[in-house]
Length: 183
Image (tube, rainbow, N blue to C red):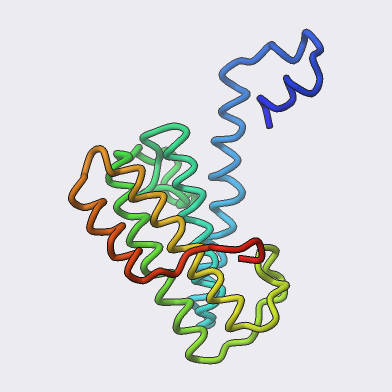
């Protein structure tokens, strides 16, 4: 949105970008979005709501992927623990990508478990909440997870060609990606 405003409103003051413009976005990911998603995961784990857990894990993985793609090495293993760790260490971007693939695999397992347990539809889901039923909602999130995994594998293909190829081939075999507008 920072760059789009330059094409929309060409006032001279709009070109005064500095480092603080970007740190606001960085801090916002951690202090708001990712923190909220971790709260959903924690509360969902306590209540056994696998659908909520799965959705939050997919969204968390996606936001961390965007964060890593934008800034490279970022806090991950010590992130989201502001109560105990006020200055989290920065983790290597390749390590974070590997952890995001694990997180998405866990998310898919949670979402499949929600379908198997016949969990109710999550009406507060702003992305797929309009789905006809819970099964459709959760299977769409699985497709989203697979599509994000494909993106992660494509991103690492130049540094880990064999691992990326194996991951991509497994996803192609599964053949469960976003393929239509409602998905």
